[in-house]
Image (cartoon, rainbow, N blue to C red; front, side):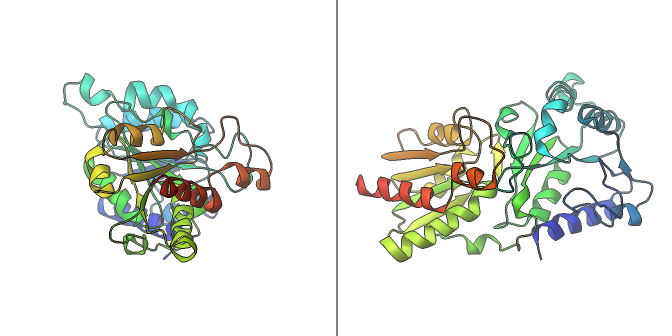
Length: 310
């Protein structure tokens, strides 16, 4: 099963199980089925509950919030996560706060799915990783899926919570097969641990395999699924007694995933380094984009550098 099929299957299951559930988004109807085909077949199966919308991310999320507090769960698909800034006020000041503002008398079961990330050559406005701007918002859980877990299971988990969730789906992974957590490198007594999430996981896994084969450096890859609230205890548990940690993310440097990893591991590891995306917009060139985002060679080099520090 591919990632896109796992998410699509979960959407079908949820729509079949809860007759109140509505899916909103731009171009989500058949035969198009969304920009990445995640909603394909849903509007044919559930004609009255899959609604295509105007190009207005703020309006889509605002409508979802209103429907949710009146008892109708909503899953929103943003065509590109880059446009989530247009819905920021609705997410931060409404979706995430309503339950608290109404003294727990309402629920806000809204899930926002957002394709993020680069490596497809879409340039400065369609290849970004903006999730860090929504991490740390009280009342909002931010998740990131990847092919080394089951993306459909993550969607079920978010839906079951009946609370606001933002799910980051790196757009390059939709066509990848779901491999499951057993495919992650987890050698005993690892020399280095790589902490990462989303689209960087596959590059971290490839780097770990090269490190084992070419350098005899045992490397564990920890693929974090919940970005916010940050699971510090779980991350510390996964790192264990290893004293060398590399954090890898596609987002721009500072105030992001790597920063949270460093904060969680203060006093616990001897050597820590971080690889991020560039401190400037993503260029409109596929090759240049690949060079700027953390790839296999850069991750491998960072791990070797930490290993050589002792």
